Amino acid sequence: MASPNSDGARGEALAATYLERKGFRILARNYRIRQGEIDLVAADAEYLLFVEVKTRKAGAWLRGEEAVDAHKQARLLAAAEHYLSREPCEQQPRFDVICLELQDDRCTALRWHKNAF
Image 1: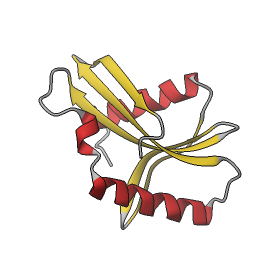
Image 2: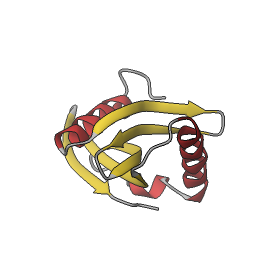
Image 3: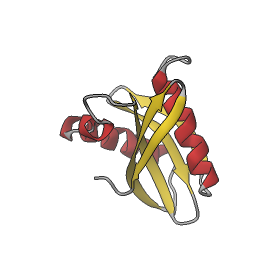
Image 4: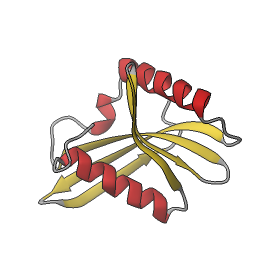
């Protein structure tokens, strides 16, 4: 979990607000089990989203997308399976990645990768 004043926490808050504006309800933030963590769980009538949020400083050398490798995906899958075992749903589960770039506490770019893996 990102510390409350970190860029990561700021990015997660911005991503949650963005999804809410797109019609999603935020069901959980930082859903954590021993095997992994999901930054955001959100739902609309059709989809249950498991969202990994990656926040970088504008102009960073490594893009957020590059940090969601096979190992990270496996950890997200484990956490999602645990979530679904406790919170069954009728919506189609989907794994999304939202990447944000921040400059001086302002979001300069947001990329939403739907059905990322």
